[in-house]
Amino acid sequence: MNTHTIDTSTPVIPADVYDTTVFYADADTIATVTNTTAPDAVALPSQDASTAELLAAAKEAGHRPVPAPLAETALVARPLLRRAGLPVPDGPLSYAIAPELTIRYAHPAASAVGSAGCLGDDDTLLVTGTLRRVPWARAATAVVVLATAPSGPVLFTLTPDQAVLTPGGNLAEEPRDDLHLAALEIPAAQVRRISPELLDEARLRAALARSALIAGAAERCVELTVAHTTARTQFGRPLSRFQAVKQEEARLIEEAALVRAAVQAAAAPLDTGGAAAHFAVAAAKTQASASATEVTRIAHQLHGAIGITRLNPLHLATTRLWSWRDEDGDETYWAHRLARPLTATVLWPTLTTTP
Image 1: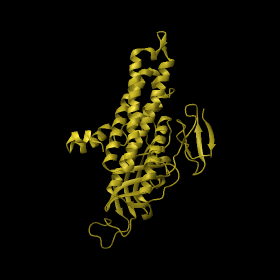
Image 2: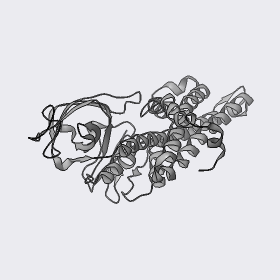
Image 3: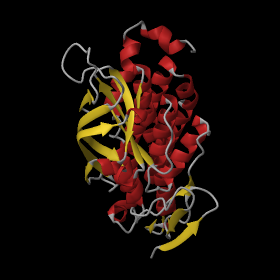
Image 4: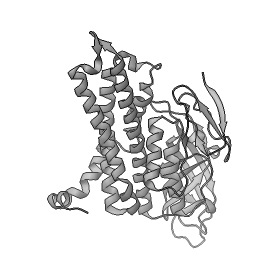
């Protein structure tokens, strides 16, 4: 049974793995919902936190698991708004990167050459289209959208109540909602023209945030599996005493360590930007998505049938891993992005030279 408490000492995101309807009470007082599987909450990092600190918080959110957009808020939406020079709203945030939208300027320039709305006297936009599978849209205070306007890439914000929301979800039942926009006017104050580099940074941030969540969930699978094989006996001895089980547990721990190391290694390059950030994040998401498959396979194999049930906490980690490995680019997508610049030049110096 869930017990509800109010924690006013620090901003937190709810940590109840079953009740996904309870989020922020307001900007200062946060409702914390606890139960036996998630006894406490994860603090929402400050806006001045380093990338390494943000990744650590996102990993912890994946480990709990926290049913709220902590990684989306802290690692993606907030930094992008600050980079674009827009105010950062209180509360949980989400994002949509490069959706297929029809964007026109609401106040066409009288001297514009071409179709109406291709240039504007100001940056007020008219946006039509659908933002598909927006993470936690129904719970977000605002959604950060990066798209292409007639003048080039733009970043703007909207609130979910400005759109028609179609609820959706992933395998873990996390909200992945569609937002339908019909000639929605976005005031110029909520719009910023951005560089292509910031649009690419948004993709990198989203992929690394997802990788950090995967790292946390993978560690949770390790904990649950080791505890299960230690407590479960068969033929008069714990499962963990069997050589075949030991070998699979070692592989499980190895995969989780690979993801953790790849995510940690990407923190500094993301701050630096450029080719180093692209390489590090692409490597991290490729490894995270690939390892998610192995981690879930081994964890469920060693748990047996009980690991499939909703009464066992394992599914809270594995269904998220199955979902997150494909979101924000799967291993095939990022492996191609990782290999493309490497194969464009002589490969050996790239592999043997320290950046």
